[in-house]
Image (cartoon, rainbow, N blue to C red; front, side, top):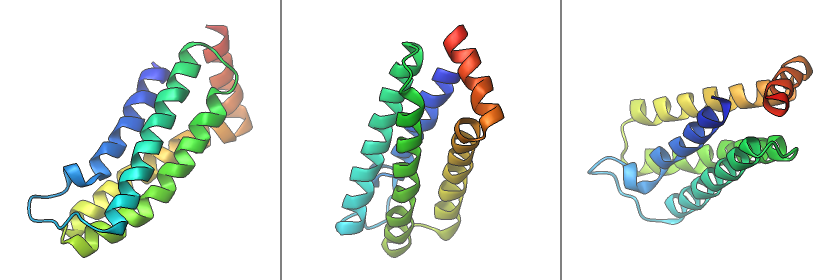
Length: 126
């Protein structure tokens, strides 16, 4: 279940790419290009972490944390690009909020020692 959640969480970074911007939003420029690259790196990282989790490889947690960090960084150029491109402020704020919430969950589950031991026990023993 955790692997599916990790894969689905990672896939939501597609929402932040220019392909998912509103119809009348300008999606050219360096900020959108940076957003696209960072989002694709985040998605790829979460995919690799999911494979590692299913294979019960010990490095999957570090890949998930690294992907979450890249995803957090991707929110900055996304917010700027979406705001400057004409995306409604509510849409941009909602996307950022949802992704920060997901990242907080990943960081808490993998960095709080008691929760990390629980995750590790359920993944590696199962």
